[in-house]
Image (cartoon, rainbow, N blue to C red; front, side, top):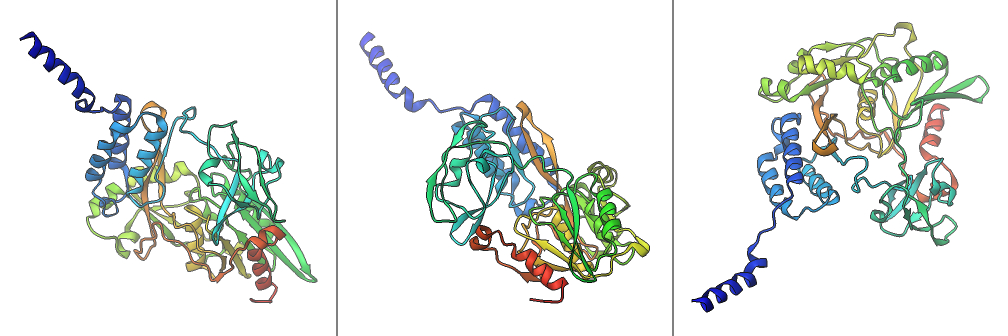
Length: 417
């Protein structure tokens, strides 16, 4: 009997590693469930863009057993959110987490087959080490991210054709954006003609007041360029600037949340959009969110600026990084004014998102309101096409040329391309 028991024990010991199933860590189970519930409760579309969210969460929950650290959970969570095929869905680890990787303060854009440097942060170590617009990244982009203060070793090909490997400190760049988020200037390119220029980096709180100051200064110019390239969005303060180019007050965009759409119970029509409660001068994030919390949906209107309306030619510059509220501004200028849009198709990231707290210091951004035109058309995540496409080349970046701005000036000076 003892020999039998001993043999059984040996057999169990040998089979043990195969028989014991890996179990997910309780921390990540709690965090996962919190993430899934938050999206379930707040995602604006009752139909989840055609995705069965319950099935998705069950499928990804089975993968939790393989998660051992924050970085692995971040990858799993981002993969799950990507199933929604929506903008404004981002999972953010705690600030001190090893998953909170930063880059080197450099923007890249795909031009042909290359990742080309388009912008280098002024105060960055990358600028100090000699990285410049037009340089081509030869090493994988994934290797640039890492712990703040650590060293990345990007391999680059410079505009002069030299290949080099640099030691560059990883830094948190580009956020928060520079202030003020709206700046302006003017130039006299020929006798009797003045051209104004507005650069809007973001449409955040305070942008409406800056728009008023800019237009007070530029109202008598003979033409105006509004540059929203690389503008990542903000809030509805963009409507104040748009009002200076619009004929009177009218609804520009309708924001509708999940409860509002569920009560409606059908696709949005023009009558539905026009029936949304009117919300005037919603030029701060709190004002917009307060209106949505109260009504579930709001119609945001332009204002009648009277004799301050600008009637001279206007050009709006857009590109691949024009997103969110800046896309809403671009759509308004394209459809409701006489402005001419120049550049490249925008990001296609037009929704209204909010940030929610999760367990263990994590956060998630979820789109809580969709965007409709007053005629009932859904503009959620629809990219804005320019009237004139101006391709960006590496040669332009290396030479410091700006084909978008050149085309805008040609148009305003009567040298239409």
